Image (cartoon, rainbow, N blue to C red; front, top):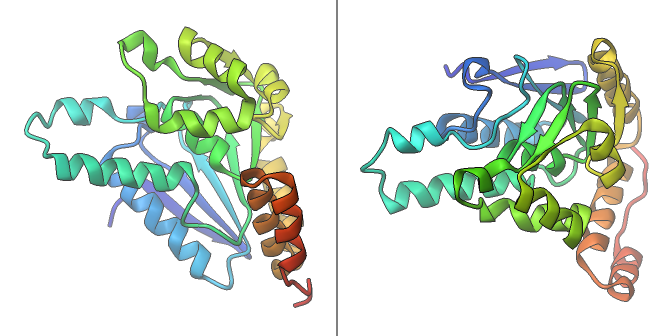
Amino acid sequence: MSDVLLKKRNGAIERLTLNRPEKRNALNSELVTELNKALEAAEADEEARVILLAANGSVFCAGADFKEFADQPDDTSAASSSRSAGMGRLFQMSPVKTKPVIAVVDGPALGGGAALAIACDIVIASDKAQFGYPEIKRGFTVAGVLPYLVRHVGLKAAFDLCATGRTIDVGEARDLGLVSNVVKSKDLYLEAETVAAQLAGYSADALSVMKNIIYQANDLPLDEAIAFARTVKGSGKE
């Protein structure tokens, strides 16, 4: 059994914890696979109403595990494509279409780690949290995360973050719309559990319908989004 991702159920709340603290919770192939599988399982589990995504250690996630890539010089294009596809599913939160996913960020979230956090529906961060896209400092760009960032913060802010590679504190991240709520580090998990419990107490049907409409509205022109919302059926009753 893999230990790179820890799973714990507390009532209707499924908690997934990145568990590679010695590697700054970098996303290697194993962690990407396990996280996709766990999210899919939580989505399919009727008893799970809300998903918390947290991390052990002082870093939420440092992004892709570039050491893994370097240690596999004979990495085939098929393996590379599979790994990229797995990360892409996470950055779109493709495995979870109907349930709220809450990121719990208590340290740096960088590159793909930032993309993973902002892919969640709600981001609750501590005063220790930081966000950044530092890949340019290594001489390359992780192209796969850029479209998601642009959609969240707009062209100018996205260009600034990625072209400079600078790391921003949680206050600026909140101002840019990357973070939903900021609390002190000591209160972070209590706040996350409180919000998760609140959502778990609501109608799962209503939350699913709401989530669907919100993300469609983000992708469609306004008139099409309005038309789509009118076609969605949802009683909001259990």
